[in-house]
Image 1 (spheres, rainbow, N blue to C red):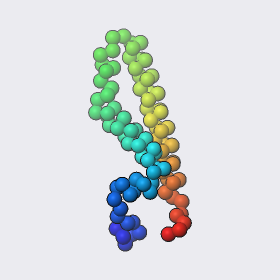
Image 2 (image 1 turned 90 degrees about the vertical axis):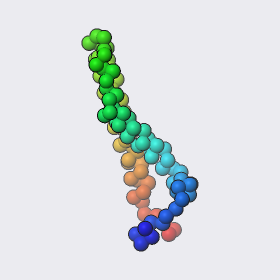
Image 3 (image 1 turned 120 degrees about the vertical axis):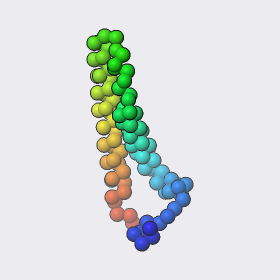
Image 4 (image 1 turned 180 degrees about the vertical axis):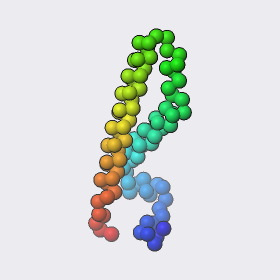
Length: 91
């Protein structure tokens, strides 16, 4: 990959060089895990709801969780894009 300007580095060295991006990467991984769990079957507890009010409450909680996950993913992607789209000085 040296031909394209990328140098192969050890993961620990990459983490040391990009320590500021770690919270955004962890946030994106958490959002991806949330969506995978939801797609696999995290919604199954609504099937056993004892009343319509419990089902409605569960749907509102899920709606809030989806909205928050979208906001977190947008902020993390914006941070990573801003961080890595800047021209690097001192190369």
